[in-house]
Length: 154
Image (cartoon, rainbow, N blue to C red; front, side, top):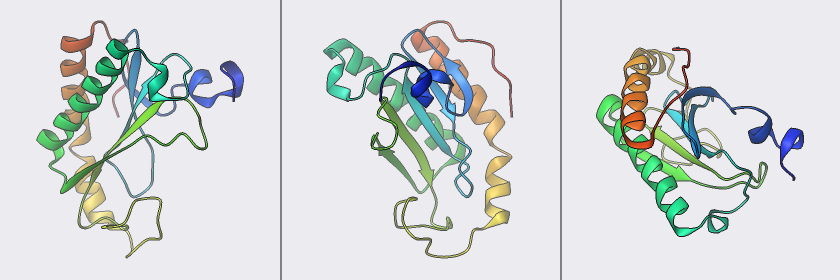
């Protein structure tokens, strides 16, 4: 897959934009059943983490770490899953997913077969905390990584 219109992460943000810096952005992913699902997306089209030089790799992982820390502090998941796959969209992005023992797939990956029905009550309770999480992410990332763009709240 090449950059530009053919790559969905070059053509669009890939979710609800939380913060954008010069090198990367953080988005909230609308994945039913997983309200605490975020991606750190490298802005330039590269396929693999090793395509970045050392400084860029460190920058990227610092952003992943900041997102994970904010998730842990604001919405207290039972576990945070980190993954970079890119089989479907070969544009460098990290999944940062807050997981809970009540989620439909726990303890399996969210891409596996569900283990139980979704918990609308738990999902709604968690969703109430997302605006504060998004604000914390914006503040933390802006303090660390430069200017952000103005984005809408959910």
